[in-house]
Length: 328
Image (cartoon, rainbow, N blue to C red; front, side, top):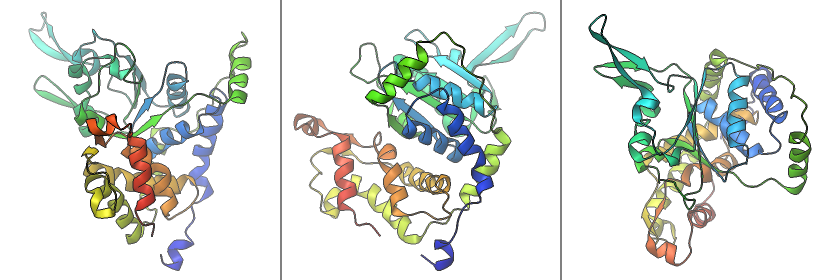
């Protein structure tokens, strides 16, 4: 890394709304710093986020609070087994007075879409989001309609082993930049939550800290963050190690059915830049990659039955990959 790159820092004014956003969310949500950081990284990189955890861990509350603080158009869809694709993207409706069809747009036309319990709906409904997530547009009848930027799908799901859930299609799950696993709060955090939520006092109003235009402007600053060629090679090695582990001295070939797609390399580079940015650095370090890597690889590595029989999880594979691949 050149000396000029190593000395790059981010102007505090660029981070003002990010710091304020964390402060506002903390008024409502106790703990969950990792979750909040991933949501902010999603905003800065145009990356969708999948949140997995049992009910009651403030996943939905965090997303709603985020939307209200950035003056964004917000929609929420509660996914259920009887939901139809038209309930998500919209449909065309016949007008008998005019004798013609006209589009009726669905809740997907928003800046932030909360897909609540996305794995409770069947695959045809989940797949209705595919075009929206990748192309930022919806096709209704013969016409296509653009979705305004920023457009972010923040989906929550319950663990697959819970009753009444459907696995997400591989094509859709690959379009999520992050899959974040939400854990239980600590004893101290849960005590604060209990004290906060057991009172009938109305919570103070949240402050709007930025708007969609401000987010798009900050994204341009994130793009300017420097990434050395050695960091790029490190990212590529991490991803390729999930596809051909033997080439990196990992004895995992018999456990991995499919490795991470090229989308993992792209998302890891984007997220590492954004992670460096919110840390106030103008350059990416290997630590930035290690911080965001597991959440990007988690849902892109498919293990086989042999791994399941030997109780080897995706988390174990990711840990071994990061331990084995040389750090630049």
